[in-house]
Length: 103
Image (cartoon, rainbow, N blue to C red):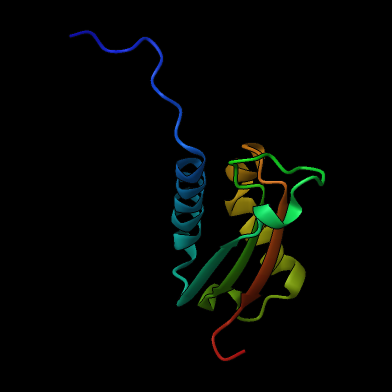
């Protein structure tokens, strides 16, 4: 039996799950004690950047020791840098709540 010439595309739910998995893997580099990801894409249907079945709007809540002594801008730059590949794939909006332990 031969394999199909074009493998099936992942389902919309599968595409989002894969994107969230890539985000978790990228942010694991920070050794977070807390990492919460919330796909908010569905809340932006009809707005700029929304693409059905894709992770386009994401809220990240992260607590990591690496943020100690860093201001908000530095924390956001660090998270954005780690997610640059995902942003290039179409992540349109990223809300970041980054804190050090105890904050």
